Image 1 (cartoon, rainbow, N blue to C red):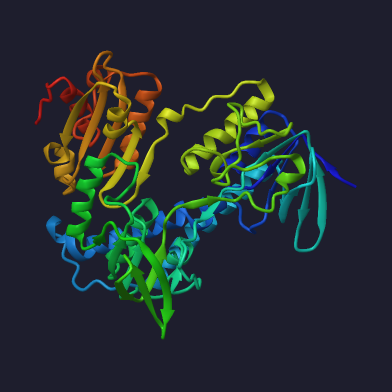
Image 2: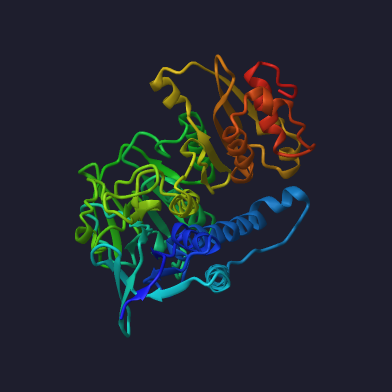
Length: 462
């Protein structure tokens, strides 16, 4: 006999588990289906969280080797216990995935382990390791996330040649790591293994790194990463990668070859919309395998909704979380809102890169007149004290109204600083509004205030 609920959520990643919890808070009886044993989706298990744990650990390792002496701290020879570093990463992940389990129990969300498949309107079949269960609900939310996109000609063996999942658990530091793709994930994991001792070569098809990000900041970031030791080969079309006699051989631009120890393929992500039974309710994914939805996240099938990586928009955990709350509130109240103009993006390299809103290239393409204010971290007192003076803050404001259209930060703790930018833009702030706010001294956030002043050519400290 089928189990009946008010809402069934398929997928327990950031979008799915947040949707399930919010639905329970609103008094609904909720089921959440997840095929992996641990909750939290790609982000918690093999994405955002483990990569940030390794980024932090590897940054500490590099600081102990190279920068502590600037502060008068002498530590002698510094060794690497990679196994211990990986164990710490795993403990961080385990604590957070167990935290989601606890939240499900607290909020009375019923969890089903197995693969979920739609079986017509209002019905989901869950195939688990031990049994098959039928669930019914008037509202079903698809939040199945995404997976790494394969690249034609690449022979993935799940060991020497693999995705970010494999790159989070190399048992030894590769002598030479080739990263295919100069986006967020490739640069972050390339940075991890470069700090731990790898030679890192990044192959990028385009003529720039970080596609879609502010070009000026991306170019400056590339120069910084090159000083750190990462090699970039732009305009490189990879045509094959395979393991030959225990070595990886990568071919690009038809004739160029690189012999290396490991290859990380990081060329984007593909929505998980296969084998969900979408055809049983008449849903047809688009050419990018994404599910079309309206402003309330409704698909073409009555009672079926979709959020997160399976719909259009940036494939970011926090975007999925916002949609998870919005879709449930839309079901409960009939209204939903996510401001897609102020979703931040962050690259957790050193220095960090964070952005929200439009960049210069987008404004120029749209014919929007703007003014620009820039302030370098080298003129910021707190950055000097931290020995972290690389980078800048850039604010773009409408030339007529002064409303902030975009804020872009390359520098220390940019990922935390961007929250002020997103909040300001969400409330329609002008550069003058930001400039008039008192920022504590000495803090890195003063660089945002100064950049806002610079929009009107009145920065104080530069």
